Amino acid sequence: MDQLELQGKVFNSRLLTGTGKFRDKKLIESMLKSSESEIITMALRRVNFQKPQENILNYIPKHITLLPNTSGARNAEEAIKIAMIAREAGCGNFIKIEVINDMKYLLPNNEETIKATKFLAREGFIVLPYMYPDIYAAKTLEDVGAAAVMPLGSPIGSNKGLLTKAFLEILNEHKRVPLIVDAGIGTPSQAAEAMEMGVDAVLVNTAIATAEDPVMMGKAFSMAVRAGRMAYLAKLAATSKYAQASSPLTDFLFRGEKK
View 1 (spheres, rainbow, N blue to C red):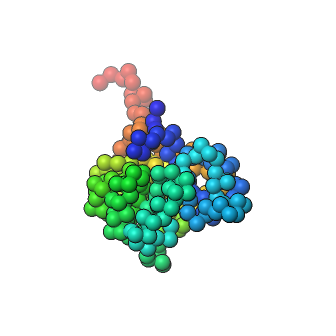
View 2: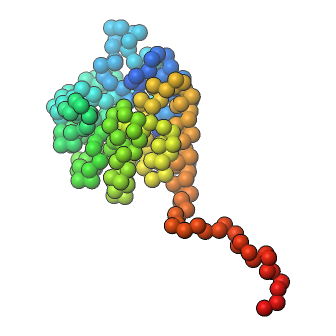
View 3: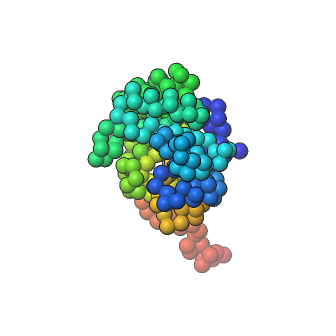
């Protein structure tokens, strides 16, 4: 069976989802069911034990793996603090590192991300760092213990798709841990395109959560991810500059003629 493995943890789905931007938190459970996603990311600030109606954990089924993110962290120190609080709050050992101090484009700070990843991996976390697709940073993240590398396809929430495709292909060619495209994927077809490249998974939040029907859109992304993965495993046919007939064009006209 073709499964996604993250530091010994095995998942049947290669679609990771998120909890942000849903107009109604009650849609999250139905979206998870339709998308078959087994990992969902969330900001720690949405965990509110004093106000159950606002506590995002109350809307996520118990069998789903939580992926708290360090949203709001501006440096490694802040990311580490958020990760520690998340574990103490009972969110488990998975953590998505987000270190962002560029407030216009929300691009991740690779240097601070590496620092946080190194520390948290040593502390027993299963670290999935969100990063700008740079091969040197990706290799360093692997070296310091990242369970996967999560480069952006395009800026967070932009739905612009795989603007960094050329760089994603480079990272995918040299990966030693799973490569998960995170941020910017706006349509199921873009998710399929990423999977056809051979990346191991995609994380989609905005495109699902802000759709008119998030539940149906979750299903669409699930099907696209599976189709893209199957196409990759089947080995895509080569492209050609010129047309090539799928069967002889004139052979039957002259069959049996004497030479």
